[in-house]
Length: 284
Ligand code: KIV
Image 1 (cartoon, rainbow, N blue to C red):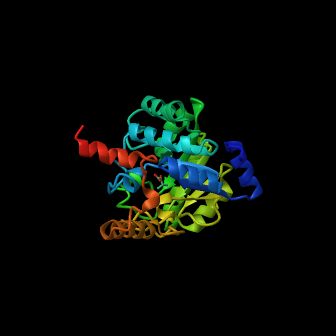
Image 2: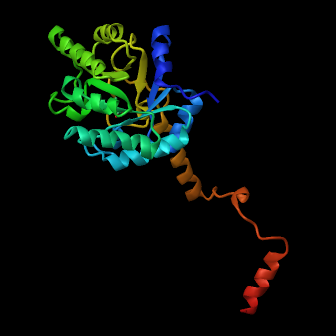
């Protein structure tokens, strides 16, 4: 069994040019698969709310939901670096609340780190969580929790001026003490510039190949999420097709009488069938 990596391993991987593999996970079985597949990092993302609970966005997710799912993922992947995603309004209203909620991921779910969205505007929150001894991953570029202010789920930093703002956010996150940063939906040129400029590892979800690691949403990777497919997604299998086909075959078998078969039945013990028939006949 591989040893669980730490933030120092990820810094070394950045220096040595070894790519970091990163995936979301929301439940015990998928976490087991991810650990068996050798993922370096897992994120219990607030995308949980869309991928598992069927909401249109991530805003409704609560701290308690995030904790329950992080606990399940930790049970499934005890030896993988695990990051809990701070849900909307768990860190925006006060620094004290942010530190407390960040601590819950470590104390109640055994997470190794937390992630939170925002650049310059949440520097003070990042600093306070780091000062509490917690490993922090920043998240800038497209930040889904504030997508209303961004005019929707749109790529960021596509003009020179906008790219400069993204770079300023990245620098602010690093200066606040974050240990890694996730870059979402920004041009690869900007992802590369930030990766070369920062000393902390950069993780990309739609930020190009030059970043130190790549993140995908597991429900996209396995073809389970069907509402829409962002440009940065690569689907590696089609679970929706496989599972729907399996379920239809099950319905056909039940309706046609070919399931269950003899091998699926619990027969009575030897001699008991006749005794049972006699018992029923005698009415006792
Ligand atoms: O919740 C999540 O999975 C995320 C990704 C969209 C980056 O934060």
